[in-house]
Amino acid sequence: MYKPDPVSLPLLGTIMDQLSNAQPISKIFSTPPQILCKLPGGQVYFDSKLELDTDGWPDGKKPNGTFNGDPSWQPDTSLNYANGKSINANTVPYFVLPKPKPWSETHGVLPGDYAAIIFKDLIAFAVFADRGPADKIGEGSIELLRRLGEERIKSDGSVRNLGMGSRIITIVFPGSGRKTDRTNESSLLPKIDERGRALFTALGGVVGNG
Image (cartoon, rainbow, N blue to C red; front, side, top):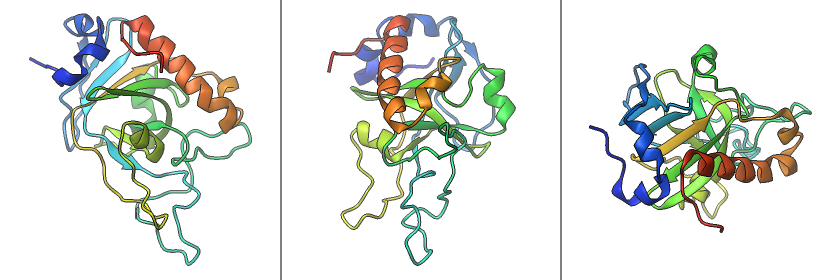
C-alpha cells in the first residue's frame, strides 16, 4: 500500500483521498517509482527519485568545448519558446518525462504542461520542457532542484551533477499549457507559478500564500 512521505501529507490535502481510486500506469523503469498512476481527474501522479537535467543551460559547455560538469548535457530542450530558443535549466523550473513521445501524449501530457513537485514540506511548480531516457522517470532542471532547496551550481560556475534521491512527488496536469504562456522566459516564469498553484489547489492540495 503506497504511503507518501509523512512530512508531505499536509501539502497533499484531499489529494490523498483520490489515490485510492487512481488508475495504475504500467511502464518499466530502471529505478521503479513508488507509485505511477492517473488520478480520477486525469492528473498523472508519481513518487520517484529526482535526477538532475541540465539541458538548455547556456553554460553546459566551457569555452574549450569540455562539459561543465554534466557529460549528458544537450544544448536543446524538447520545449522551445516562440523564437525557437531552448528552455534554460538554470533559470526555469522544469521537469522531464520519458521518451518515446507517444507515451506522455497517451496520458494527455504535452510539452508546456505544468506540474506540482513536492519534496518533504517544500513545493515548487514546474513546466514540462524536456524528454529523457525511456527507462528513467523523475528528472528536473537546476532551477527546480534549487526551488526544492538543493543548489547544484558550484562557486566556480560548474554544475554538481547530482540528483536529490527518492520520495519526490510529481503531479502533472495534462492539457494545462498554453502557447501564449511561453512567448519568452519573462512570460513563462510567472505562468508556471500562477497556473501551477491554481491547478494544485483546485485538485485539493494545500499551499501557503508565499
